[in-house]
Image (cartoon, rainbow, N blue to C red):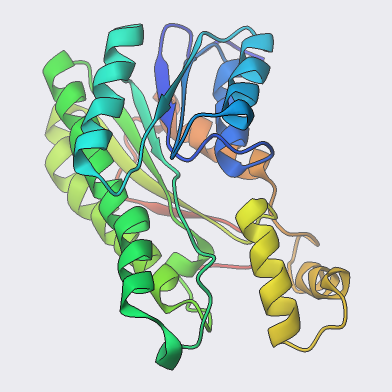
Length: 266
């Protein structure tokens, strides 16, 4: 694989889970030569394991704890990344929660605020902090927001999650308008279902909600409805993130790209 990101630094929030989407994205950038910043709510054995695996691929890696719902911690994440590697060239807003699944009429306001605080406010705080560092460095940059198929299509029992992901597309467009003059592109990617830790919780909930006896039956039905015959994989999203961060995508900004095997087409 080419080393097109050699000398570049990528920060991915919510990347401390083994087999998570964030890890998959960092693995792709590590394979292409980038310095990697692993960040999650806390840094423990699992996160250090993610970092160790990336180092085994030849990447230089640091780990930084960050609660993205706290603006000060988002700024600290960027500051520590710059201190470690000299710059932040690519920032991926991947941190998100969607396990608070309830009918609209039963949603607790505190749960609503928590989901919006992480998924949308967190993306804003990190975008602002990363963009300030990129503008100061004067070399442009790439900001990539991990939205969701739920940014394009509503799903039941996920009102806060769906709203936050729709909002992330709006944040992407608003940010792109103002940051383009600085050579910074801002784009969103919208994966369909990916069975990560969060995806597994959704599988359990929706298989019961929709009347499937087994989770495997629910997943089989999901695959049958997809033109490509399967749900998404972390590598699918990682590949598009790598393209958006590359020189080939220098003229694309403000877009929300579906990564859904044809399941989502608008």
